[in-house]
Image 1 (spheres, rainbow, N blue to C red):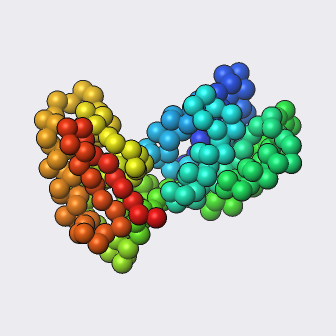
Image 2 (image 1 turned 60 degrees about the vertical axis):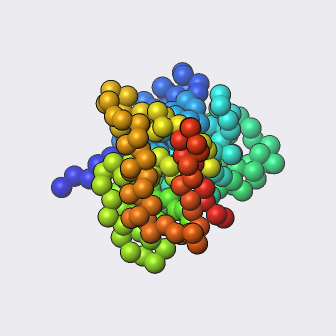
Length: 232
C-alpha cells in the first residue's frame, strides 16, 4: 500500500515566494503542501489536521513566527518547525531556536539546500504525522481524535463534543461568544439553537470529570459565552 505524501504547512505571506516554494516542494520533493499567510490561518490549518513539518516565516501580517512557534510548543505541538526569514543576525537565529524551531534558514536560500533540510526534518519526524495538544494534564490527539485523562483513561466523546473541546483548547483563555462557537463547530450554514452550546458544555464537563479541584474550568461569561481557563 502506497503511503501518503508527507504533509507540510507553508506559512508565508509573500505570494510569489509562497507559490514558487510550493511548486518546488510538490514537484521536486514530492510533498503535499498547504498554505497559510497569517498566524490565524496557520492555527486554523493546524486545528484541522496534522503535518510532518511547518515552514514558518518570521514576519507575518498578524504576528510573528517566534511567538507562534513558542505558543505551539507550550500547547504541546511536537511537529518540527523550520523558520524561513531574512532576519539572519545571530540574535535572530538564537531567538528562533529558543522559541522551539528545529532549523533556521535565511533568505534568500539555495533550493537544493532547502530541500535537503526539509527532507532531513521530515525523516526525523518519523513518517506519520501526529498532532497532540495537552491541557491541565489531559492529552488530546487531534489526528486520531482521541482524548485521555491525566490518569491515561480514554474519554469517549461524540464528533461534535470533540470538535467543541478542540475549539476551546485552541482558543483557551479567550472569551468565546455563542455565535462564534456555533460557526466554528457546527458551521455557518447550520441553524442551531444557541443554547445547544450550553448542553454540550455540560456534557463535556461531565465526561471530562470536572470538579472544583480540576486544573481547568469552562467558565460561563454571562450574556456572552464561555472561556476555557487552564491552570499552569
